[in-house]
Amino acid sequence: MLEVFTWLADWLIYGLAGLNPASKLGASLHFFVEDTTKIFALLVVMIYIIALARASLDLERVRHYIQQKNRFAGYGLGAGFGAITPFCSCSSIPLFLGFTSAGIPLGITMAFLFTSPIINEVAVIMLWSLLGWEFTLVYVVIGMAVGIGGGMILDTLKGERWLKDFAAKAYQQAAETPHNDDSPPDAKTLTMKDRHVFARDELKEIVGQIWKWVIIGVGLGAALHGFVPDSWFADNLGSGQWWNVPLAVLAGLPLYSNATAVIPVMESLILKGLPVGTTLAFCMSTVAASFPEFIMLKQVMQWRLLGIIFVILLANFMVVGWLINLLSPWLFSGTLI
Amino acid sequence: MKKIEVLGTGCKKCVNTAEQIQSVADHLGIEVTVEKVTDPGTIMSYKVMSTPGVAIDGKLVHSGSVPNHDKIETLLKN
Image 1 (cartoon, each protein chain N blue to C red):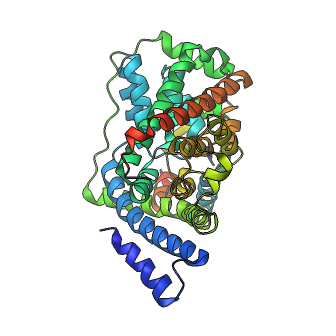
Image 2 (image 1 turned 180 degrees about the vertical axis):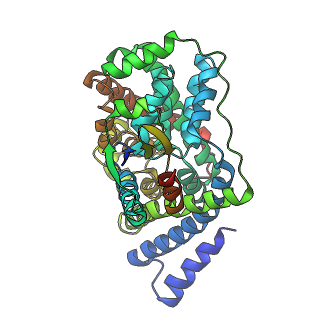
Image 3 (image 1 turned 135 degrees about the vertical axis):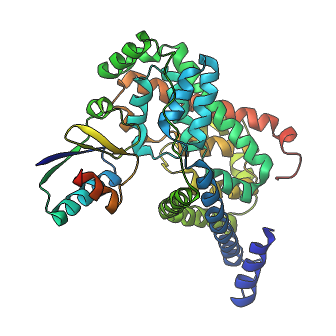
């Protein structure tokens, strides 16, 4: 079904514009047209459908649900809801405090916040259409693992010691009051029309936010695709020495971007032969460890806790990179590369 | 005189919300003071988890989105 976009790009770039498929410009433009049309078409359809389904999900209910579960299920749920809940990074602080003041452990709240930027419907749709379902699955599992692992480490270190006073106090109070008999907040009752209105608004909002990132990301990916020689990474970075992964993580740090812009770049890097684990480490570091986000969290945390979280994240990305590089011969049985 | 607080840590949506409430209030001829609240502790005390939130005279009436024109009218008239 998706070949339609390849044909469209063939027709536009090689046919109508008359560019040579073997030329750098031709290859770049073809990549750009194929990917942007494909991504936008899929996004519009899928965001609408997903929003229809998720119109009744709200954070109060999510919180209640997480609260009722035991700690270990909590990490998984935290990361899982982080992935599916629509969430704007400017809500990080209220969400953090909302969870904390309900007595949800720091690690579970952070599992939510770690996973949230890495996995969302836009990222999944783009990965699926550009890199196939195997890669998408690996990406989702890793995103969840980074969140769950990071959260567990934080709780093991008793990270809540280093919250700002008012947040620590709110957490303590909630932890001391039992909340077993709470009934869940009422579910919204929605008609099909309500859902449609919600989905339409959501579609407008999300596409309005991300369209420029798609263009930037695909543009960069296309430039890489057309203008960087196929053997460049192999020649200059070797074929996956261990230090490539930390290097990729560090390189991704100052680049603050969202998953939407990074995924087309990832596609290009992988096609150019950069090992999958190294590419993923770079991508996660760009998406999930962003300075603006950290500065925001400073409002509720002491520097020490922020520092610890930062180090945990970077360490997780490196482990992911090494692990996937090690496992990639078994994970992707020749379909990808 | 209604005291309106727009709760949010300072994103664009919160600014939009504050501006729209002011303009609807002017339009309806209702006297209001619109104040943007960015302090995390205060936002927490309103139990808001998704911003922007709107409180009128100390009572939370809306959260999670920029309220549309009709919603603002209803909120202000009550």
